[in-house]
Image 1: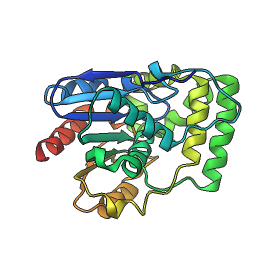
Image 2: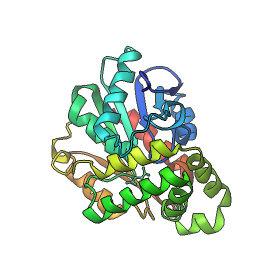
Image 3: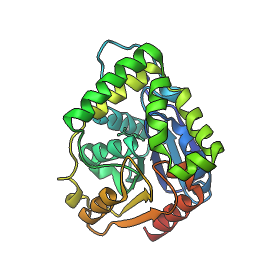
Image 4: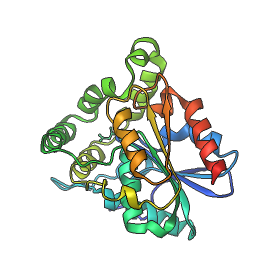
Length: 263
Ligand code: MLT
């Protein structure tokens, strides 16, 4: 069985802002930003297919959930919510890959874009092979191997050393990830398209955010994304790694609100 509509959480009212979480998280990643933005706009945070309340276990061996499938799920959710006009779409990391796929497939439904700690390039062969191996491990063992592989790269060295509560919160988000969802999205990310050709054609206001010490989507790479998108604003958050939602929540909220006010 597949979910007909993604589970989701909402805050506030007004202009719709959709927040797409990263891998292997769930909508809970957005709790701080969602409640803050919800004082000004209507925030909608879905659980992407395979995670949180959108988890299901009809796993067939080798299944991949592509970024296009996730994007179409988000479009179906907007249909179900009767949101026909353009939305502001924020995507964090894998959520950014989904946001770019959404832009390609449902471009008329995007009024503004937020690319948070994400990448435009496709996986190298080596990265794709690593994801395939990790998917097999996660199916056999659950989220443990993914957590051990990812946690040191998700957080800035000073966060790992001095902010155990942040590391614990990020770990808790991952511990509940179902093994089927992990495997299918890992395989889907390995199949994702290179989005670099899309960037100069992004015709909507765009915010690009990175953490100063992001080891997954580096400041240099994200500055390049911002440069390639006409008129994009680029914000680098000091002292944060990849998990700006948790390492710099106040700064991320400020950058997001400034951007929303500029629209
Ligand atoms: C994420 O945070 O969503 C992942 O790091 C994305 C990825 O593995 O490419």
